[in-house]
Length: 391
Ligand SMILES: Cc1cc2nc3c(=O)[nH]c(=O)nc-3n(C[C@H](O)[C@H](O)[C@H](O)COP(=O)(O)OP(=O)(O)OC[C@H]3O[C@@H](n4cnc5c(N)ncnc54)[C@H](O)[C@@H]3O)c2cc1C
Image 1 (cartoon, protein in one colour):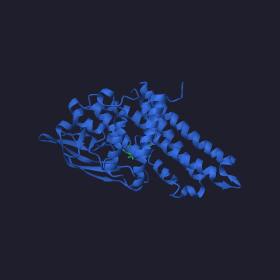
Image 2 (cartoon, rainbow, N blue to C red):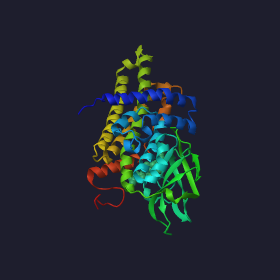
Image 3 (spheres, helix red, strand yellow):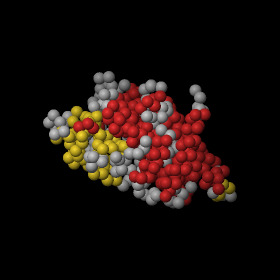
Image 4 (cartoon, helix red, strand yellow):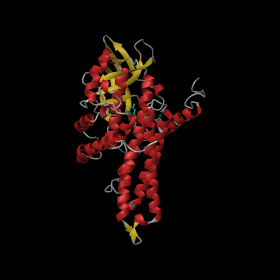
């Protein structure tokens, strides 16, 4: 086992760090910290991320991706500010789902603009009455002449307010059945307009999280996704990567809080010496760095399992859940190191605390992640019934 980055990985990490410093951080600073960035700003950043292959990181080279490992992706991803990182996960995971699920004609139509970062994509599964248990979705697809009609509501969808394209999970009710099979359809906003609005949330306020309403939304039949790869398999692979990436968003936030706390502890003096020289402050700083390091390693380990083609569901769930909890505590401890200053908006740690609060929910709440890990450990699925996984 070798925990060093390879020279190539160091190069990738340094390239994205430079890109963030040059193109992303100034953009975030220019805009209102409490409002979603305008679409033009997201497109500008996506265009830059596309140059490093990150808008299609999971795609193989022959499909237009960069051909990097998921471990490489994680190392680079950690450097991206979370308001952008959240948006990138949604966009890039949609690109990878479309690549896996679509036929050749659909790939040719949808993928080039998403890969190049010229258009923004997202995936809509969650609904007002359906969250952790996706079987309850109600959005319905029917047919009218040569077109499909979509009716329903999707909620808590990253990117939806600015998205050019949304991959919608819905029920195929074309045969007249009240609850048909679950299918997916690509809704392109330019030809199938739908309403969308932002939802005001506690953190990641420069990011996008919204609701979409499909009211007799007319979609071409050619946009129905037949999913030759098998929808469930694609979702599982996408979760096994998404979850450690969400963990790395938490690592990014905790690392920033830690850097602020470390600098402050060296200059702030109490009882005649820098607070960094007090034993309990050192213990707090040690706890913070331990939490960040352990979280980072768990997330990278889960991604490396995906690269090796090994079972990664449990490791990915464990990594995300641990990282949310440990890094939230690390941000909290960092605030404490700053005393009252930690509570001020000026010190910028309180914003990190609000941002990190957003992360335990998407792609599996902490409870659901514990059940996924527990299922892998015991062979029993605790979600529904009491059956063994194999039953
Ligand atoms: C930042 C962010 C980004 C998101 N992006 C997207 C997106 O792009 N696309 C999309 O479709 N959705 C997205 N979501 C929605 C997200 O996937 C759901 O919010 C999540 O699945 C939880 O669903 P819920 O909020 O309805 O909570 P619920 O499922 O209603 O859960 C409520 C509470 O009950 C607990 N609970 C539920 N079932 C069990 C159980 N069996 N055992 C124990 N506890 C249980 C949960 O852990 C939680 O604490 C996003 C959400 C956030 C916050």
